[in-house]
Image 1 (cartoon, rainbow, N blue to C red):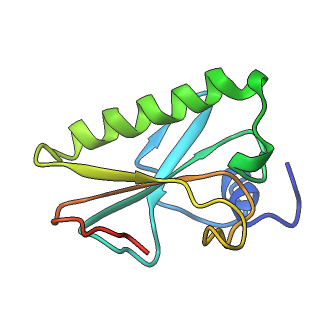
Image 2 (tube, helix red, strand yellow):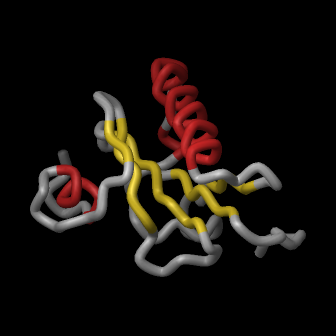
Amino acid sequence: MNTDCLFCKILAGQIPANRVYEDELCIAFPDINPQAPTHLLIIPKEHLTSMAKALADHEPLLGHLMGTAADLARSNKLDKGYRVVVNTAEDGGQTVHHLHLHLLGGRQMKWPPG
């Protein structure tokens, strides 16, 4: 845990979040600034600053996060489609330096996204 990290504070219960999913590896909760009718953040319990810091050892965790996103999409009835986004570093739009996935759905997504 990183004591300066917003998401680590949420994981520790120091900052409240409406956890819509939790297991031994991750939690999910609604984004406070939603960009779609469904906008969930999926964060690992392990503090990993970004995708750029992920190593081969993290492959099981990364696969689990993607599988969790797919399960949450099904449970939120995003049958018409959805987007999973991982912002990485400053130019990638990452503002919280704890790896996290955005699950967005419930509307037509545009391209290019940024």
